Image (tube, rainbow, N blue to C red; front, side, top):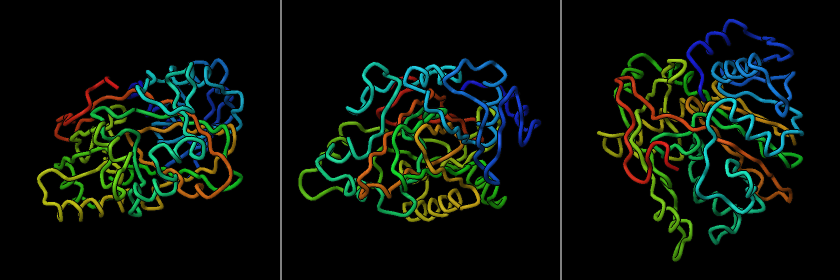
Length: 331
């Protein structure tokens, strides 16, 4: 998300109920999340509103818009371009709109169930076999993960399907000083498919992982390129091993840091409705996609656009390095 350092300061000065034009920002929890009202995302947003949304995203890490039923595919892409360069994925599922390569459609019941030769609930169980493993940032195994994601809901179940986000800058600040100093010096390997439990015999998803290996070494604490905040760069889905630590040491440290990152006081949860939009800073958050809808006979159809990001930089000034299957700007 291309914003100068000044955007964060502007957001903090206006505070709760800020009003650039008709827009209002209402924080919804102590550390993360804000509702934005008075904005039609499908309309022609003026620069003051765009700047206000940028500042709110940087300040609150994820912002929510309701009732955006007029936001179709074209307007979704146009909105994303006001904040950065949309990512074009080389591979998308069949549910994604063919005429809008910037949009990826997540249709759990319609697409993912039989994609790798197993029922959707089994696929989730094999990917999420620990309580913290579902927490992730988008494409965290890349050397340049997306800067931000804009996700809109088309169809949602009448209940269930909530998404939860956590503020990784607040989680870092909440560590004790000695632990912050320790984490500042560490780097870790992030790899696609970490911890997946294969099926006996043939496993289509395992073949997919082996054919599309992606891994990077990221600083365990990154410096946010716009706000200057130190961010605890941990997640349960991609993080493989802390460099230089033994596996038992690494596992213990990662469990401690993941539990810190997902403490309830650092989180916010969204109950989706058709027309809801969430816009989050992928550099400063992790999120937990819902796992409670596979048994429901209701589709959950969401459309997302991701904004291209930069290579993370640690406290020591060292950038992330690509290990395999990834290069800056190449998807």
